[in-house]
Each structure stands twice: as structure tokens, then as C-alpha cells.
Image (tube, rainbow, N blue to C red; front, side, top):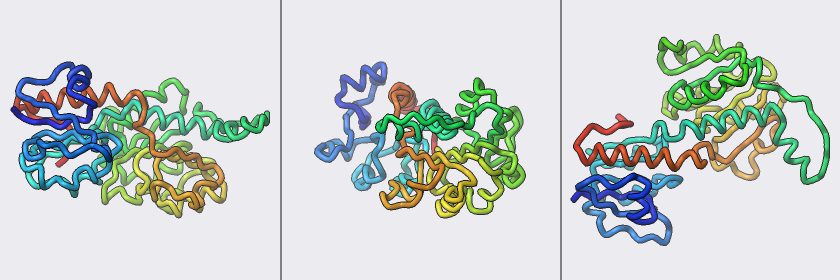
Length: 309
């Protein structure tokens, strides 16, 4: 039998949520909680699904997993886990699992910022009725930086909002739909009213939105970052938002968590959520489908999906 560590309460729950356990797979449930002991099967586990919302510390003892062949994350970004993966072990991410949830929060942040929902929420406890004119998504020129699964999901959800245009950017140019290469950003940023940042965090994308890029945005533009905090230069963003020239809606920050004393908290026109893009009810059924499919492939000896090179 091949041992798989799965992040469920017990084998019964795992079987129910996965639609059964593939033949030849022995499931050990492990969620890496503080009071949960390290499973006795450490030397036998071959397929390890990392618990969601846990950091790379779950792989601190990876050298003890001497039979390990596959590590499956439940996050799309895996940069924090890569250094912990032993040689010869395949790492797979959760591309696709967070598309719906992250796309939803991207639009929610844009709408909340433009229509001042954060302001009205602060007014409610004081019972203040003070209308403020808002900025709609309708008629706005949208730029999506990092046009992959989630970028496409954001575009799909924008379909009913009557935006003026949607321009797509990725590392390389593509056709059908038209996707611009990242090198085109200097020409595209001045024509963008709303910018969604959803590119992966790599050495090449870190700091990709800095002072020069922010300066190219038109007055009143909104930057929505639902990718990773380090993609945007925090000091440069703070300078632009502090002046009131542009706005920002951020599900991620740099540093993260954002320290209580950080000036970004009180910068005008900045709306912050605490990195909850993927944390919604949409996560669980999609994560279950991914785990079931990958475990089935592994049991059959088929090629896995979402393999990180």
C-alpha cells in the first residue's frame, strides 16, 4: 500500500469528500496543528497534501519523509515551499482551485473602493448618513497584469459590469484572446483606470510595479493587488496614495502581515483585506476535486498536473 497524508479530520471524511479512496492508497489524515502528533508513517508517506493556510514550516522535517515522491500544495503560489522540497520530490501547486474565490475578492475590492463601502461601514456604528459620490466599474478601462487562470476568471466576472475595455498582460504575448507581453506595460499603464495585479511572485516579477510604473497611471486610477505583496513597491505605492493621486485595494501587502504601525493602514484611498483571496466556501469543493484527481493519477501511475518545474 502507498501512504498518502491528507488534510482531513479522519479517513471517513476524506473518503466522503473525495468520492472514495483509490485502490492501493492508504490514507493518513494530518493537518499539522500544534497539538497533533507527527504521524508514525513518516518514513512511508509517498504523497503529501499540505494543509491549507499553513506555511513552509510543515516541511521542516521533510528529510524524515524518506519515501516521499509528491508534495501537493493547496495554494497557487509555492515560492515559500520550493526551498523545502527534497531532491527528487515532485512539487505540484493548486492552480485553478482559487480562481473563483480570488476573482471574486478582486472585484469586491474594486467595487468597495470605488463605491466607498469601507467609508460607509465606518459610518454605520456612528449612525451617520453621509452619501459620497462613487466611481463605478462601468466605463472604466481595465488592465489585468498576469493573465492566467485567475486573470481569466476576473475577466469573466467583469462581463456584466459594462467596462470600457479589458487589456491583458502576461510574461509572453499570446493570441486569442490578445495578451500583451510584460514589456508593453509602459504604453498600457497610462490608458488604465483599474489595474488588477495577479501575476505569480518570481524573482522577475518582484517589484514589477514600482515608482516609475505607478507614475504612469492616470490620476484617479485604482490598483488592485490580489497576487503577492512584493510585486508592488510599498514605499512607492504609499507615496502615490498619500498624495491622493491614485487609490489602492490590497488583499496582499509587503510586509505581511502589515504591522499595526505601518502608514499604509491610514493612507487615503487605500482599502486592505488580510490576504483572504482564496479563503472562502468556494475553496473546499475545488480543493477536494484537485486532491481526488491527483491522488487518482498517482495511484494509476499517470502524469500529475500542476507540476512546478
